[in-house]
Length: 138
Image 1 (cartoon, helix red, strand yellow):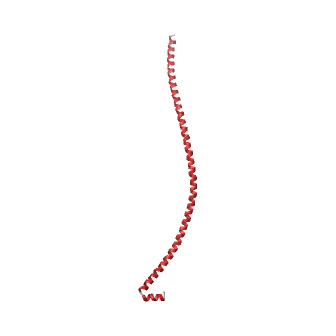
Image 2: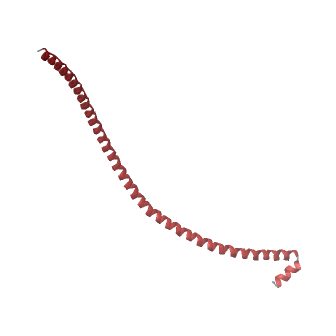
Image 3: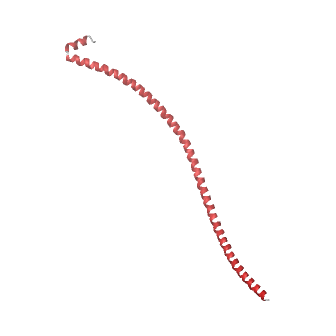
C-alpha cells in the first residue's frame, strides 16, 4: 500500500508537470494564432499594395502607348519637315550657284569698268588724247 501511495504521489507530480507543460503549450499555440492573424493582415496589406501597383502599371502602360502613338505621329511630321528642309537646301545650293555666276560676271564687268575709269581719267589729264579718243575710240 505504501508503494501504491508513493506511485500515486509520483503520478500526481507527473500530472502537475503535464498540466504545466499543457499550459505552456497552450500559450505557445495562442501566440502562434496571433502570429498567424498578423501574417494574414500583412498578406492582406501586401495584396492591397500589389493591386495598387497593378493600377499604376496599367496607367504607366497606357501612358507609354500614348507616347508611342505621339512619337509615331511626330516622326511622320519630322520626316515631312526634313524633306522640306532638303528641298530648301537644294534650292539654296542652286541659288548660290546662280549667285556665283553673277559674281563672276560682276567681277569681269568691274575689271572693264576699272579699265574704262583708267582710260577716262587718262583722257582728262591729257586733252589732246581725250579728243583723239572721242574721235577714234581704241
